[in-house]
Image (tube, rainbow, N blue to C red):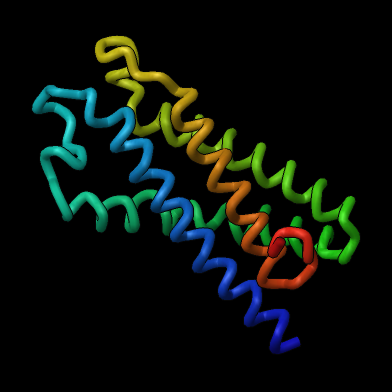
Length: 148
């Protein structure tokens, strides 16, 4: 039981870091296009933006981890290759959907004026979901082929 709790505690930290990296990536790729003083992003706030990403994006999104991702990981934790693939696809798609949602929440006032592309967030957060699933597989030693 201790190993189980330890594993998913580490995976929560990985989740928070990946959401933070995803939000920072979208900010660098799309947020830098916004040149108005109405928007405070990485360009205006500098290093303080990292704290804002952590406090207002990564930690609130942790609820998604405990409500959806953790139970899904527990239910589909059998060591078979097929279960790993199913979980990977589901978590990757969930990351892409959440990226789209966060993009529209964060940049909704600037999408048309600055020609921001929501697919950037979909791709970045989809890759974060894929990375989460692969890290989970490697740490749990469920997917030996990942280490090759």
